[in-house]
Structures are given as C-alpha cells and as structure tokens.
Image 1 (cartoon, rainbow over the protein chains, first blue to last red):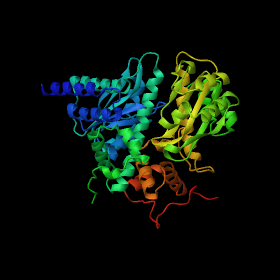
Image 2: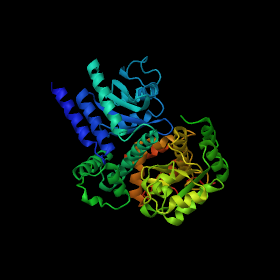
Image 3: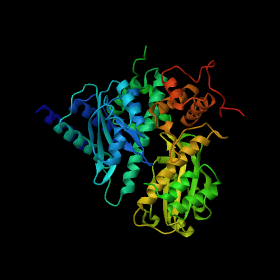
Image 4: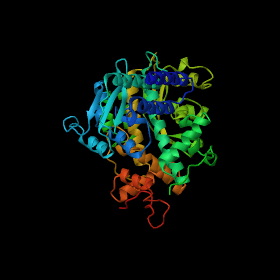
Length: 246
Length: 246
C-alpha cells in the first residue's frame, strides 16, 4: 500500500531526526504537513499546554494567518481544549452542526468562515499525562475512518515522543521545561517572521518559507537561527529573498 | 495544577510591595527565598539587576552570582530556559566555578531559576532558593514556579512603560491573552524594524498605541501585518511612549 509505505518513511524520518541536537519546531512542522498528506485533510496543527494549562500552537502544516488564528482561539475554547482536558479524542466533528459545536460557537464560526467543514482533535498523551492536542481540519466533508483515526493517533504519539524525548521517570520538570522552551521558540519564530517580512516587503508566510528554507539547507535550528537574526549576529542579506508582494 | 497557595499569590501580584510579595511567593513555593531580577542593557550584553527579593539568602545568592559572574540565574537569563538545581553540591565542579561552596556558605543548597520573557524578548529571571538540598525537583513547586514566572512576565510587560501602563484583558494568572496571538508577535517584529528599536520597545509601542485609541492589541497588530498601519509614517505615527496622558 502506498500509504503504509509513506508511513514507514515518515517514521524513519522521525527516527533519523531524533539526534542529540534536533530541532523540535522543525520536526513538529514536518509532522503536521505529513498529517495533511497521509490523512487527506486540509490543515493540521499541534498545540501544547503552557504553564497555566492554556493551549498554545507550536507547529502547523501551513502558516496562513487565518489558520494560526484558529489555533490561537483555542487557548480557552474549542475541540482541542476539551480533548486536552479529557484526554480523549474527538473526531469527525461537523462544524455546521449546532449540537456538535454548542460548547464553542465562536471557534466553530471562525472555522467555518475559514472554509472548514469538519475538525478532529487527538490528545497528545504520555502515560497518564496530557500535554496538548493534534488538531485537524477538513474543507471537504468526508469522514475519517477507524484506520485513519488510528493513524492520526500514531502521529500524535510520534509528536509526543518528539517533544518529550529526553524525559525519564522522576524528571517531570524536564518535560515541563521542554514544553516551555518549545512554546517560547514558537513566539521567537513569529517575531522573526515580522522582522523579515518588514525588511523584505513580503507577507509573513513568504518570509517564513524563505527563513525555513535557509535554515534547513544550512542545518540550522529554527529557534537558534531566529535568535541570531534578532540579535543581529546573522546578516539577513545572506538569505535568498522571496519576491516582494505586488 | 497550581496550588491554592500560589493561586492566592497570583491574585495579589498586582498590588503590594516587592519584598512582601517575594516573601509570599517563597511561602507558596515552600522555599527559603525568592528574588526577581530584571535584565538591563540590550541583546547579548544584557545583565540581570535585582528588582525585588525576600529578606535573607535569596538576595545574597544573587549578589554572589553577580560577583562571580556565573551561576544558574545568569544562565537562565542568557539561555532563556529554566535552570533547575535541586542540589548545588551535586553540580559538576566546572559548571559554575567557585559557586557551590560559596552558596552553601550563605546557606543556599538548591536553586530554581526561571527566565521571564516572550520569544526573543528577555525581561528578567525569577530565582527561588532552598536551604536544604532535594534529591528530585518537587513537582508542585515546579508547576507553581512556572505559573509564577508566566504571571511575572505579564506584569513586567505591562509595567515596562511606567505609570499604570496599557490596559490588557488578561487572565490573572498568566501572560495577557492578546500576547498568545501569532499576529501580535509578527507585528512586534515589523515595528521593531520600522522604528529600529528592540522587540521589547516595539511591543510597548504597539500596546501604547492600542491603549491610547482604546483598541484591542490584536486589531492593531492585524493592521500592522496587513500594512494598513506603519509606525514610521509621520502622518499616522504612534503616540509618545506611555500612550494616554493624564
């Protein structure tokens, strides 16, 4: 099967990436795009709980502002919040059903405006602990079957391992530090997107693509690269610049 | 989850004198001292300076680190990640040369240091010290300290401009809600280029602008990212620092 082959490749990709100094942000972003590809959904994002238990987006399959905003709305409402609190998946949620979306009408309305008709929330869990959720969106109303849900859960499991790979028993503080660092790195990347799109006269999306492309081809961790740009130790004129928006 | 004791402290964080607050924080964390220092200076040259502390060993421990030029508070400040040392005597000798013995002389056996900041914006460090070493990091203490660090970050961002600062609709216990949105961080990066100022100053200008016009910060940030509002445009320029007068 094509899909199983692709899945095996993805697991290899992840295993290869889990070196001492791997880039958690970049790997989670790749995983998000793989979710879209394998599950045939329109968008995917990974949200983690912060120090006070509110969900923050750490990676997404694409960086469109409207999608990022949908994740941002879920700091206090939405399917991921329920999923994170209960630790159980909520799948095939019809965004046009008033009943299914009754507890988060604002989120559902925004999701529909963005063109989505269905959403899924899969918990990121390690043993008894919930650390966040994988969120999927569809623009077409096909249902995800049992095998696809199982696949989504497997991908959520890979994301969890990726984030908490250094965790050992008795070291829950290391896990919390890693979550915190990943979330803060994400903010740093948004700040650098702003700096680059202003310098180049492009959209934040285009700036991010150029930024990520350079980081990947030069094996730089996104957060380290962003920090070097922000503190001026890296000259951004070196990065191939995207064409300015018209 | 946050302990009841810490929840009480977080609620009272906005009012009251630093020393009293630090003592309350120390009680809630069940440690022997708490100190908060602010980063003064720009970029990589920024050094922490004491802001407030509980009476006794916390201030001594910070002073010792500033004198030696090394220690967990300084590491947390420069790395932007938490540095947690439940037993200073167990630390490799070359990590902070001279520090463990001197610290033990002051009565400090363990230290928990948390950076205060947002992305690349580094504001300061929260340091908690214990007189007795622990084998492991107590889970509740760690969760409470992270929540306290998030709340202090919110507070420092608000008070950065002096006066009563821009109004924010925030949860009492964390970083203001608006600061969870990607568009705000992107706009911060853009404004920092437009005005050639630091990210911290750029965020402050954005918030002052929103406050002076009674607009949500997210709306102002959206205008900046969409190119409808520029801060280096004389006609539609930003107000003076501090925003509203009188």
